[in-house]
Image (tube, rainbow, N blue to C red):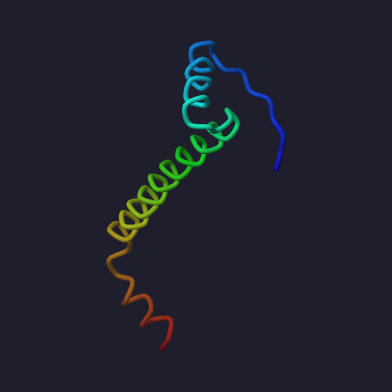
Length: 74
């Protein structure tokens, strides 16, 4: 595990302290869980965007591709 240092606004830190006390998790565990959820959500969105771009590339491909392939293999 990599050790890092972050700066939190006072209000976020206070909220994390309250959640930490009520959930029996320490603040670092809460931050790791939040980071995992955010990464998972953004990764899903990136994957959806990749498929949309791929589908768009197929839609705009060359219309005479089969003719060119036939010419190559003669």
